[in-house]
Length: 249
Image (tube, rainbow, N blue to C red):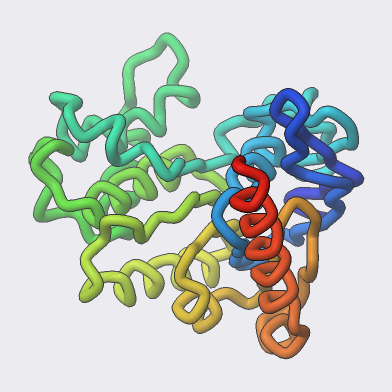
């Protein structure tokens, strides 16, 4: 079964087209790197795939269910590109952030010993035990990202979607971060990763897709890198930018 299946997805802001007839299928257990020029529609597509935004046309399924009817939100873990900024001033600790991942399971009841065991395991899985009582606002960008991934793990997510997670992360811990994603993927979690660092993501993702309004290529990483899709997408983006400048846009 596909974790995500998108068919002929199109979207525009007012009269500005962002996505044009994008169709792609992301299989369960896949580690996908989604790349493309700035403004290419990557974040918009990811939000549509997760049901956070509705397409103008086309359809999306999550785990075989139409996204608008999908009710198993705990299977999805999403870390947006602005989450570290938005939460950086929250007066909460790492443990409290990770506990949020159990609230949908707990409902109105109090967290149980089983819930706390799952929380402890999630924190351990991302190597954040030494920071468990630290406030999110006192952590580095990379440490915050780990806390948010732990929150997704605590919710027992089957799909982890990350939007440029290494922005603001110290270069010396980027490899450690990707090693963590690889381990989670090997444990069966599907990963969809928007990343600006194409060189790094291509070392870890087993498939890659290139987007610039339309989908240029989605294939195994080695095939993708040999396809010429990157050059095509970025050349197209530069041509559009040049026309906009010439026209005063």
